Length: 253
Ligand code: NAD
Image (tube, rainbow, N blue to C red; front, top):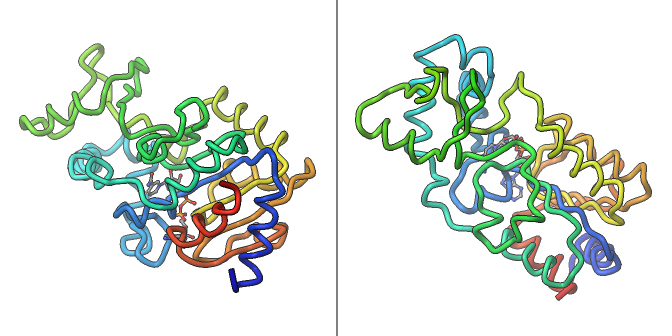
């Protein structure tokens, strides 16, 4: 391993017994799912698309919901395959070092790669279910997508007629309390926080890094671009995650 920064980071990973991993959209771009804020990100290319993830706009604007359903129907997550970065985290788990896999992603690729669902904490929910914004009923996303394919452009809740949305956390919505509590516990108990593919600009998820460091953990941030938390990290590694994570985690196997 010629790169000294990578070698330092690999040393930190090799020395860690309890690793909390925090992943973001950047770990899935090599699987063909665009991120939001990277150079080819959805919001970088189309800043107006941010409204799709804003609860108040989604509730108030039927045209926005129709666009959201069209995008959900053709979302790349339905056909995406996990990449080398997702799979390398399964190796960390098999080595008995993974405390929790905290993910901001909603695409389910960690579980598809073989990560134990019990260790995956989906901070921002999941695309695989819908939730009714009136009665909170949850249902498989496929049911709603079947209705969209059959011609409904804004399917409503079959129970109460309320507005349906993917079971993901939009701007203006709180994270589920029990889910975030698990993330806090893992961040406070880890001896290494490994961040992969996040701009670390979405709170409160990004704040887990500060929490871990304050509790005495080392932090390794792997991302293509700088993040606001790089200054408090023990090591910052730049590059493509499909190369970086296997290189970092090889020594653990
Ligand atoms: P983000 O878009 O804000 O940041 C992604 C970061 O990953 C960027 O800094 C980018 O430079 C980096 N990156 C992209 N591809 C990379 C690669 N191959 N190797 C290394 N780095 C790479 O994403 P975020 O921090 O996760 O926050 C945005 C929100 O977007 C999250 O809440 C998440 O729920 C949501 N989101 C999820 C998905 C998904 O589930 N796959 C996709 C888009 C957005």
